Amino acid sequence: GENVEQHPSTLSVQEGDSAVIKCTYSDSASNYFPWYKQELGKRPQLIIDIRSNVGEKKDQRIAVTLNKTAKHFSLHITETQPEDSAVYFCAANSGGSNYKLTFGKGTLLTVNP
Amino acid sequence: ETGVTQSPTHLIKTRGQQVTLRCSSQSGHNTVSWYQQALGQGPQFIFQYYREEENGRGNFPPRFSGLQFPNYSSELNVNALELDDSALYLCASSVDRFSWFFGPGTRLTVL
Image (cartoon, rainbow over all chains, first blue to last red; front, side, top):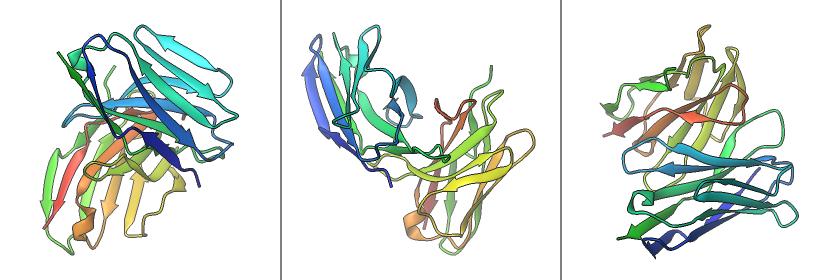
């Protein structure tokens, strides 16, 4: 089955700096890669996603890149703000008729003012 | 438009008991998935329901079972609770089975 590796597990940046979180996946049939933000005690919130027919997608300060050949995708946050502090999860779907998501273990991002 | 809701918010049970968790999907979403999130981990897929039928199952024993109703709401039932079942249980719904929107979760504690 699908395996998703995520790193780093923790990331601390200064306000205004950029943050990059990287994930690799194992199932070449996966075709959908979302990123979720989870604040303490809250639900995972979908912040951006990318499908396999696209190499990059941007939404204001957030961007995701996908390299299908290398089976890795990354989240880029520019001009970080303290409110970006949270746990970020990458995920990949399964390639068959079962549309489950396999999640990475998460990255705790801390943005220091 | 109402988002995904879950009930109850918190639950405390003892080992061996049974529990039922409930989920109302986002308006218009016909597919529901359940996930278990242990502390400090990513969510793990339990199973998925599409049009009232199970459409895939993760590595969870048969004592984890579910239902989906005609209005697309769903239940997760866990029998013979074990200490390791203590976790946050998340329900997610989707209209296209790509973008998934999560509920706030039910925090289950098994003593």
